[in-house]
Image (cartoon, rainbow over all chains, first blue to last red; front, side, top):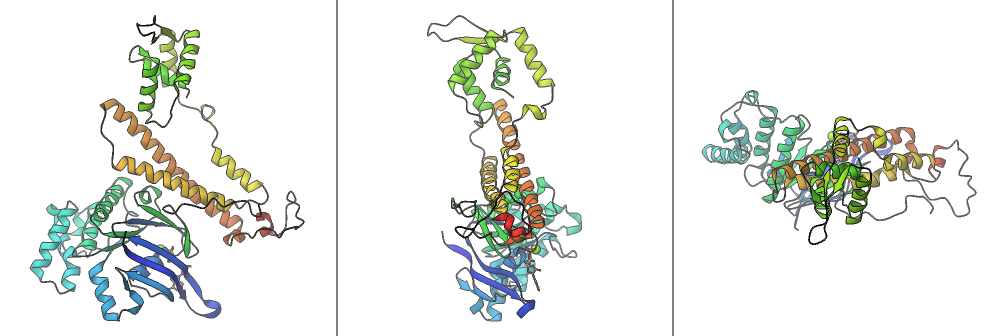
Amino acid sequence: MSTALSLVEVDRIHGRGNAAVHAVRGLTVHVGVGELVAVMGPSGSGKSTLLNLAGGLDRATAGQVLVDGAELGELSPKELAKLRRRRVGYVFQDFNLIPSLTAAENVALPLELDGVRARTARGQAVQALAEVDLADLADRLPQDMSGGQQQRVAIARAVVGERSLILADEPTGALDSETGEQVMRLLRERCARGVAALMVTHDAGHAAWADRVVFLRDGAVLDDTGRPSEPESLLAGS
Amino acid sequence: MSIAHGLLALLQDGPRYGYQLRVEFERATGSTWPLNVGQVYTTLARLERDGQVAGHAPDGEGRLRYELTASGRETLAGWFSRPVTLGDRPRDELAIKLALAATAAGVDVRAVVQVQRVATMQRLQELTRLKRDPGPTVSGDTDLAWILVLDNLRFMAEAELRWLEHCEGTLTRARPAAATSAPAPAPGSDQVPDQPSADPQEALR
Ligand SMILES: Nc1ncnc2c1ncn2[C@@H]1O[C@H](COP(=O)(O)OP(=O)(O)O)[C@@H](O)[C@H]1O
Ligand SMILES: [Mg+2]
């Protein structure tokens, strides 16, 4: 399996000296093409930092972050901005749709910001909405849609164009469990078509939809359900 | 729940051979409770002795069919109408294990919790896969039985994961020193395991 996202031995340190906070430390995570990976961990364990580093919204203090093989630390600000716009899609807990824009306009927005002509962008947006089963609501405003529908619009926006990596921070957090499952089903479908997704969640039932679940603690990977655990002794000194 | 209740329930549909009961039992419970033929026949023999089922004369191939008696029907009705109580269930081994891990000297309880979290999450992933891509459908009733059992297993696994996450929080608050893994005691260290220590780290060694 080729790798869509790699973080290798990444540190992200805020502040200096005695006041330094290690948001993540020695963090290594890989997400393969077509893979859905869930991230769980207590508050403050570095989940959001991981997503921000993966999406180029934050820069590693040490270590490497690679998206589609490109090392983010070596990109110019312009190249990084382009990669963020073209390759990476974000999904947030609170959907983050622009209230005054229709579903189709929200989905088309990242394309238009990237210089795609309005008509082309609209066409691609409507198609992305059809893929999340919302073709009928293309001209509706967010306020006239249910939470689950809004989140599906957000997913359409995250995948429109040629995006290869979806980063989702608690995408099911504001949804009831049934609707949350629909969103998980949708993310899985996208991954089946070759998108890679990294998703933070507190809901074990939703995390279980992922190919792998990574547990973070204190800014590093504590466990990974895709990695066979070593039968080490739990009795210290035995 | 006993095998006996399960067999009585299946016989409600009409007389069955022992091997049929075994197959139907496993199908209804989604193979989560495999039985061997021996268990089925021993249980049937006991039910017959107690007047809950009656065996027909052997057929040409020497196979015995069983049917429910009036008394068996009564037992079954009683079982369905009463809620399951705590005494009917086996104690949860995991809860006891954690309690003992917290009590015993030299055990890293957080590590015990984490090992279980990974295992239970893997199990929940497996169950979710089964729910996501259901296999070929059999008869309507069997499908429904399987869905009920599968959902039960999923919800139990989810509840266990929530509880384990809660345990991690509780342990972190109770024994903050565990945040860094406890080093093994130096060889020959003269530790008295039964004696509570003032140093919280000591409890982990
Ligand atoms: N800008 C920042 N300045 C200082 N500390 C930060 C900053 N961002 C995050 N942290 C710290 O880094 C750690 C990880 O944070 P975060 O990635 O938000 O965790 P999570 O999303 O798992 O709750 C926390 O201890 C947090 O306080
Ligand atoms: Mg966070």
